[in-house]
Length: 85
Image 1 (spheres, one colour):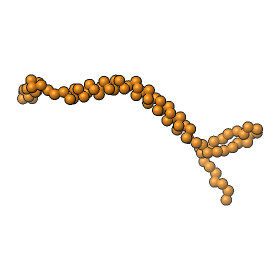
Image 2 (cartoon, rainbow, N blue to C red; image 1 turned 135 degrees about the vertical axis):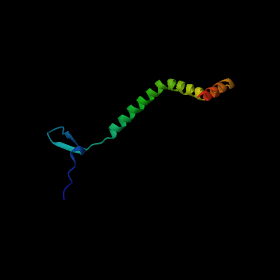
Image 3 (spheres, rainbow, N blue to C red; image 1 turned 60 degrees about the horizontal axis):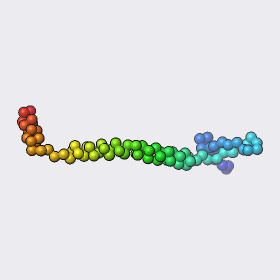
Image 4 (spheres, helix red, strand yellow; image 1 turned 30 degrees about the vertical axis):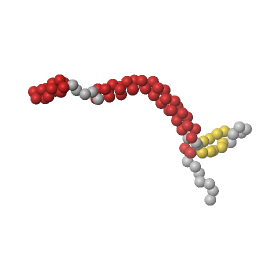
């Protein structure tokens, strides 16, 4: 009929200021979550700023390579090489 005992991993043990009594309360992971979110956000922003120039150069270079049209001479050369196979 009393309170249900809590699991040990759900309890936080703190010492009272005046004597040796122990007070148990539920643990909260909200603070750790907020700290991790802040650190991850800052690290992501720094990494994004450092990699943005290199990434943009890579994307532009790939677009130029894949978007390039072959000249008539290059097309004929490819056809000839395919016929030789």
